[in-house]
Image (cartoon, rainbow, N blue to C red; front, top):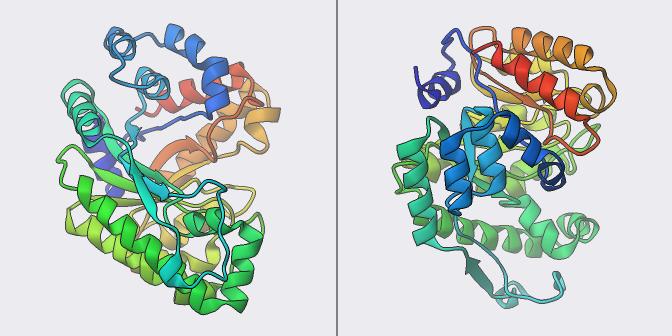
Length: 331
């Protein structure tokens, strides 16, 4: 079974007898550990492609580690403004212009090369896709106030973002190499949702539905990234058809409860503590937690081994290596 087939099995709630993994790092951690990882897990094809500029250093590390899925980054868009914010007093018709960035030629050339040379599940990755796009433009405190006190304007902004997102999604979803789209929008804090469940249902869920429906129309899976405790909207995500949730932080949610309640309808990706065990535990403790999480979350399939956030520089190299080597035991 190929890595791509393995992830497909996992995201359709089958039990292939193996547990795929994906261990990714922050920008700073790639700078700190990337060369060492590339040397220790050396792959000649990866090194050639990195030298030739076909793949980035984070992608090279991911491929060298044997991760079963790979993030790729399609062209996207941003606000055509210089100060990073704008006034809620501007009427919706006067929202700032937007501008696209990235090369479709380079993107399609890269993913074609990856499909032909590597056994990975390719995920087109969009960080800050909807909710985050709105509050990045206004600042989170301002936009939370907009949701409560200037609802019509806030909805117009969210709707505009979705209109732009739909165009950009459709521009790359035709590529046969893409297996899934990951949409990142952090809806949770350590204790609960950033907004009320009612606000999510009324103002954010309809836009998410448009995106998920389009992705499904093209036969791709929907991966959702949201930090924090989002138990208050799990039923909504199931209803919307989300296939896989990342990063499932054990400090915020009971991941065993997630598995027991939603494991027949959604797959999970993450769950190994980057807040406690990985930065502060011993290599032995990292191995023990990794095994415990894998063995509980992979029952009947539906789990991808991963840390609960990207690995940061507070994680000792020995602990990172313990995580990688333990994940490999289940393949």
